[in-house]
Length: 166
Image (cartoon, rainbow, N blue to C red; front, side, top):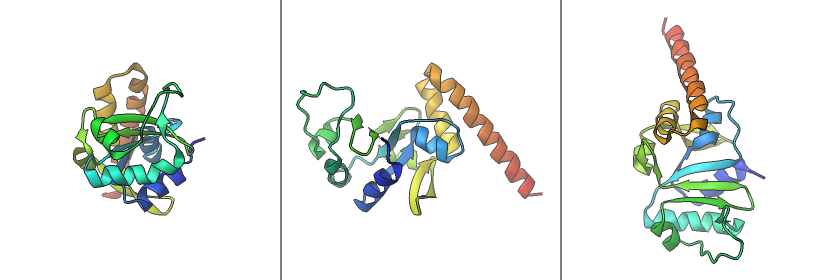
């Protein structure tokens, strides 16, 4: 079962540099989209990879969908050698994304994010514009409806801002 609060608290407490992206970011931005995992774009420097391992190792991350007998070592070296990972953990499914299609790496994603309070802690979250950009770049059929909803949310916010400035 997904425990977003536990995941975000654990990452923050272990000084992991990340941006919340994907479905959870969309929900925080006002979407009605439901998702069962947490997607984060993470910094890929050595220290951050070690922080990720320290944060998530107690929750037994394992490659989602992989056979249970497949040998897998969850360490900084493994994360360095890969880019995007989909993990099942004791606190929910977590996707570590090293590069977001349509945007780029962690530093690029930061340019499309904003810091919001989630569970009384600051968290970098992908803005609606970044969500739209990444969903369009991926181009999956299932994302097209979600893009329309995000575009509508963007328009509502724009109209709200215009009314505030009158």
